Amino acid sequence: MRPMLLKTNIPSLKGTIAIPGDKSISHRSIMFGAIAKGETTVTNFLLGEDCLSTISCFRKLGVSIEQLEDKVIIYGNGIDGLKEPSDILDVGNSGTTIRLLLGILAGRPFHSVLIGDESIGKRPMTRVTKPLQTMRAVIHGRKNGEFTPISITGGDLSPLEYVLPVASAQVKSAILFAGLQANGTTTIIEPAKTRDHTERMIQKFGGSFEVDGCTVKIKGGQVLTGTEIHVPGDISSAAFFLAAGAIVPNSEITLKNVGLNPTRTGIIDVLKEMGADFTILPYDKDAFEPSGDIIIKTSNLKGITIEGELIPRLIDEIPIIALLATQAEGETIIKDAEELKVKETNRIDTVVGELSKLGANIKATDDGMIIQGKSELIGGTVSSYGDHRIGMMLSIAAAICKDKVFLENEESIYISYPDFFKHLQSLIKAD
Ligand code: S3P
Picture 1: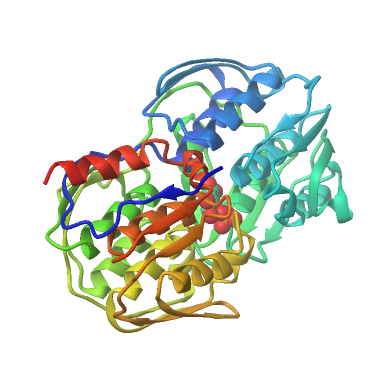
Picture 2: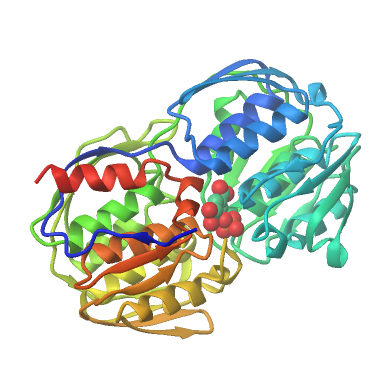
């Protein structure tokens, strides 16, 4: 496919965007709807390819799911209603689908085979398969269960007390799904607090759990009941336009309905510390999943250090934060972020490699990167390498480039933000 010519040298971005549904919450709404009893209605569901992969897998597991644009109705028959799939479950590019699905299938007394695309085939799975095997699921995969294709036969599960070796909401969630089916109480201890959408959804579907700091306990044998879910906008998608508003000259963008779950708002903390000019309008902090509107304006930014417990709260935003740092005065250090190496691409390599091509002063480290600002970005040919967040970050970088920018593999952006270019264009036209 020919590389896409991106818009460069954009003089100003002005207008309002309704941020599309949150990817993590959209996946989970299908999963919980599928294992609950009764009807679940989901609105503002994200129509990205990853979430459509989740729908397709659950249909193959015998769940009836109706979808009309961004409204989805799931007719759940309880967890025992899931049926042995006669076809392979293809998760596409979605790490959340495969890892959480393994947790659900760990307790199901039938055989399933899971595959994904080339990127999924390189992403580590033993972080999930090992604890599930300890709970007595039978799992086989390439390289001792590390890589797809993976086969799983579940059944009676023993409860587990597990200290997560990495801060990962996907691993925590997989064990929570297995724990819901185990014979007793499962305890999960995280090294740092990760996104808690699974826990919030257990409650929303009438289940319960106990939480104390980084420890979560879940009782097996709970029956969940269908409900109504309105998915808030994805802060990880909003992050691209928050950055665009801050670095493109003469800009003012209003982002509507941005998810503001505190386990996801690391990007807001970073914008604040960098000195960005933004306002969050009043919102209901006690909602099932809080959300609000944000106004961002062109800002003078300064370099900062990002590390420790903040990392899981902004892990998916690091590519766009790296771009912000190229436009901030001074040095930005990102550390404790080794997990970037096992995302859709090795995001230390892809961020550093592609931003360097555009003229940024950025160096990779073992656990992150160091960026010197402020640097003028020039232009060139760059690639998303099939990673949606790299593709979107580069498209925003292009907005401030002087020369032409060509983007290879721009289609990866459909994985999480099908309307991304439409939204960007609407802000240019509005000027
Ligand atoms: C996700 C958790 C994060 C994140 C991913 C979505 C989730 O992954 O990077 O995009 O929905 O639970 P890890 O759990 O591997 O950190």
